[in-house]
Length: 199
Image 1 (cartoon, rainbow, N blue to C red):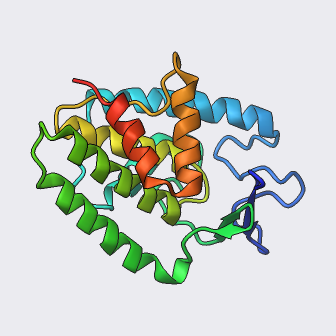
Image 2: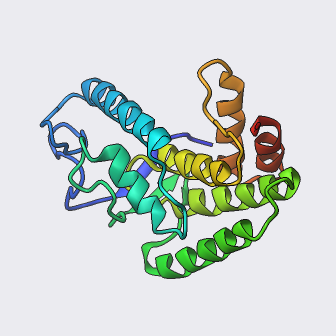
């Protein structure tokens, strides 16, 4: 399956029609330069969330996290996407049904909050279900992976656990995370989260 994303954006809401680069607050018109600037800004903002974490009460926290991470780069940081997205011919959740998806995720979060903090397996399973639902939703034009990983990290932290699905010293973790989310494999994501979470 192709790893390329496809976007239905005939009016170029997000991209410059000449360069194909995402419109950004710095006016960067080169993809590599934008990736570098974005990575630096998001890394800094991620560090801030470790010092001042956001409480995850509902799926709306996704928007708060996305805004915090990408506020220095995009004017649409923290805003729901307005274009349809697919990857390898498989569409992500359709915009017309977003409200149903958020209600479903809110219910998963409610179930997660009711779990005992020391029940690592149940926590891992529920986090995997939440991750799978958020990834299928893909609520943003860009930055979905970084937002959902931060969302899960914060949820785990609320129960007293550490979780990093993209550790710099273990690239295999990220590969397994990507494979699990791409394939919607909740079982393998559960195993990954269980193995990765620590006190």
